[in-house]
Image (tube, rainbow, N blue to C red; front, side, top):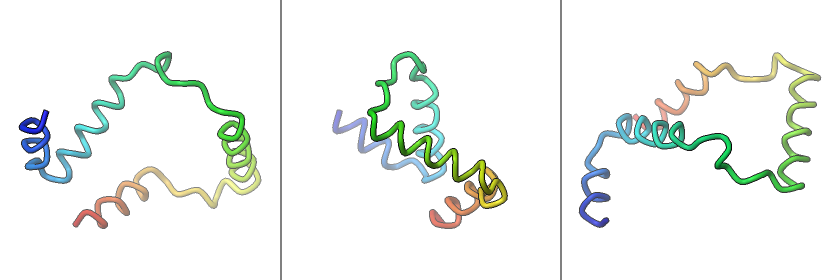
Length: 72
């Protein structure tokens, strides 16, 4: 695994992000572990915050732009 990992680290940041996204997308929804009670409460709290003030949310494009700017 060491050789493969070393090869992966040679990818550009954008390529590594794409790889992570592709790996994540390959995991079926049914194979994810269930949320804990604490996680469910937090998701519900965040959803309530969003419903109370939808304008406070950042667009996906803005989130991606912020991440890309951090990566240089």
